[in-house]
Length: 356
Ligand code: GLA
Image (cartoon, rainbow, N blue to C red; front, side):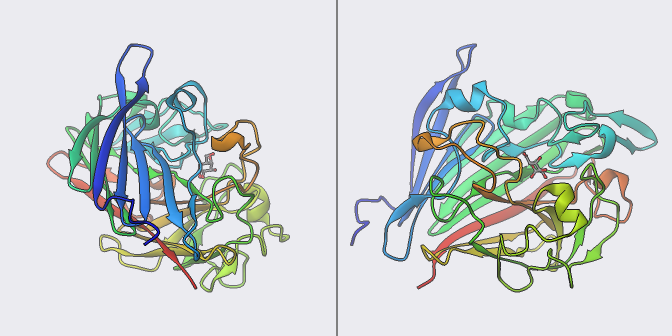
């Protein structure tokens, strides 16, 4: 067996580095069979995933860095980060809850993106080893980035065979809103091997949420049928990305929330991506009602990833399982509210396979 050297169901911890105030930051290596995943307590980032191709050759299929300093010292487009409190955009950073209006500091033109300027991706989380993985916990105080309530969030990564599973839990002490996700960028060729445009994606959604010029949902749940957003059958990511379509032009490619067909609260299919070249496949399942399919449109080579590679436009794709962007401002979207006494729990799985 080519991979007998890889331990099964193992979790190894090492101190990856320190923050400026001397806090030690651990990194965990999870191995089971052929898959190896690394996650760090800094921003609860997914740092890397090594997976075999159809010949057994391993590649790192997640974009990231081999040192903690890069994660801490640069403003990065959320490579592998856990995003909170609110994944994706809130229009003008404003929402009303129980009759009171809240303002999140804006950080994406006039809008708030991914929880505001200092989101959960910029904190060292508490870590606890669990069988097959690690659990990270972060306590966000009442009023943090303008959000009400002390929010305690726990994210658990476990590797079970070929499946990397992420569980999210959250509790609050005041009525609040939240939308937690993971923002990993994948490239099934390997993170240092060109772009993702020839990889085929299938998304289990008949509808998506169209956006305005600031990428805020208009509130409509529009059919994908007859548009370049239709991935009900597998299609190369690049096949229609330059189509003459106003939505694609606004986003510079794909950057849309899909309304998944499966039942929220139960694990259902979000998307399957296959790489015809290497044979690697990625299957994403989730309990969330939506997934943001983002084709790395804003990557522009402005920073250097592992192996000295500059991540250029479309170097990776994201499948951010989530509630819909700007939900607090759309009564017809599934609610993102959380009340004291309730526990939010969601699950997303990423399964790495091969196609012969
Ligand atoms: C999400 C958004 C994108 C972009 C990235 C981060 O995917 O939808 O528009 O902001 O995060 O660069």
